[in-house]
Length: 449
Ligand code: GUN
Ligand code: ZN
Image 1 (cartoon, helix red, strand yellow):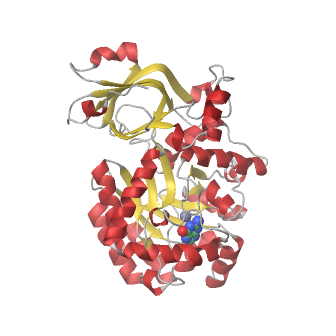
Image 2: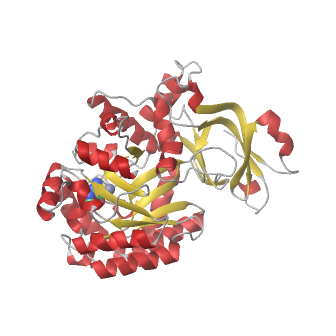
Image 3: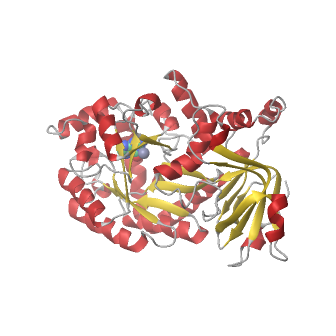
């Protein structure tokens, strides 16, 4: 794979270009074989200006628009897509991933609530942020929606690192004012004030956006959930992220803590936390009424398959959530460190298996749409990221379908069938299948070898 690019795109205003096989989705595929849902250009060119896509098309048609002297990053063996988007991941859990043998509430107490205390230290948070961004980019993920720890300095460190690299994150400090170690709790008042200050510092700063982040109903008092609702009302355009209906013991605890609420979803609903910028991780054990409420409010259910398998939480019911009379918007995510991989390819592969166990399916086209355009739409950011279209940020991933001996061997039986190739990528692929990642048209990761 040749790559002569990196320098051409660095000077502001200088167009650079990336050449290869281009794949971008137009809309959610209706099912396997829906060729109208995407655009594939066998020898395509993405022209970049000031970090954004200026034009996309056939190399033969566009090469004449390249400015004199511009270098082209050519990936003749690569499949180039918009960078992957991870809609739910925990920044302070990079050393919690792969912790043995616990269900959700024990897992939080035994591992997570210990580890997250270390993020009070800005130096630890800064080192963690560098690792976190490296790992995302190595896996072709160019945008992530991240939980910080309770400490505002953890989110400062994360946004600063993202800004330094040219990546756009959505992130927030977790609000938690009970049922956690004292070193890891805020109060309704301080959680509100710290979140508000972070919004002022980071929301709309460069590419960064804020998400108000009450961790989940168990760790927030009513006063804190009220404060989270106030923050949302006061700051149009910020996101909200939390966990919902992940595990049976969690749901029973929420019922005990909020006896007046109709159900778990209603706990959040009462405080104005549902809506089109609200992301609810897991959503595994919802009733029909709860799905109806998520649908009515345009809220997003985030499917985290590797986490749901690893923590033993249950099987996401995509078909029930998609019911045509009350469809719920959906997204896909890793949920590291409950999740076991930073790779959206691995995540899609495990999503397929979870749905198989539920007698459902996930066609490769749907999976790749979800990782790119679909997740962008779930975040309301489809005019910024998720497709290869003029005006979008030039955040790209270059995939190598023959990255490993097993993939190469399997690919010898794939005769130009795009869907089969994508299915090989999501079933056998991981960070090894990411040849390069671009942020704003600049190389942000390049695989060695
Ligand atoms: N529920 C509350 N906090 C967490 C967390 O950190 N991970 C997961 N998977 N679920 C949660
Ligand atoms: Zn989570």
